[in-house]
Amino acid sequence: MATVTIYIDYNSSGQGNHKLSLSDSEGHVGSGTNKDDITTDVSSGDIIKWQIASGSTVSDIVTVSHKTGYVEFLENITHNADGSVSATVKSGFAGGTMEAYNISYKVTGDSTVHTDDPKLSMNPTT
Image (cartoon, rainbow, N blue to C red; front, side, top):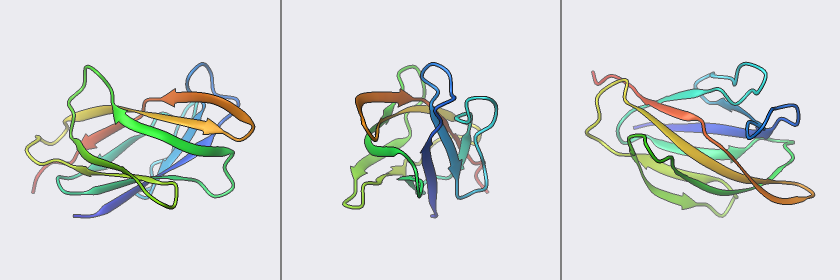
């Protein structure tokens, strides 16, 4: 069991709903124009922590939730006192299984709740 951190930043040049710039503790960095195209690799029992990047204009992670139409392998989604959100990866999923989820967030000076939808990929079992 490991803790994987996904860092959330705002990308004002992103298009449409793709305004997040994402990176993670595995070394993945959002690619393309929108900087939100990231797939984080996880294993059963891992803790995933979504954290606002240092210096970001993202002011609040409102929710992290399952995206309809995809496998759901996150459980115990919790808002933490430090403003981050964490969840546990359920067991029982084959390697390569993908989950898309929604991150809803606010930006400093804007009361609008924005949403983006990165992905998680289950690591093969060893």
